[in-house]
Image 1 (cartoon, rainbow, N blue to C red):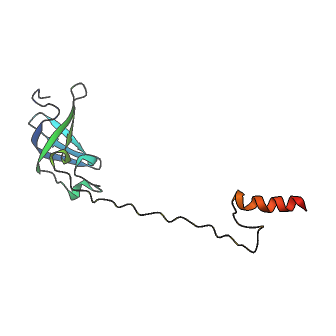
Image 2 (spheres, rainbow, N blue to C red):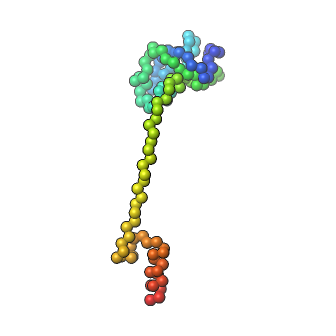
Image 3 (cartoon, helix red, strand yellow):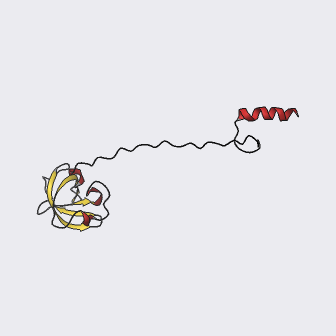
Length: 125
């Protein structure tokens, strides 16, 4: 593995292979890294083949270098500016109003204050 490759550096590489989980990118004659599918572009990527093909020259940012395992994690989207997210407007929630039936005191929701007078009257009878 080349010693010049460090996390955070931006390099030009060539796509050498595509798998469902990511794309392999040759950084030089002896060094290759992987761009995980989540690092292809901003947003959801269903099929990598819609974004890349073997032989494409691309700019990548080195996310991680694991010397022992010989793995280099790369990102294409880290070299691109994130698209603006639309501002979400919170909608006011409608509160359900309890309907109190004045004619039928045995059903519905009444507050304790409303029922207290009724209970006092009932207890005197």
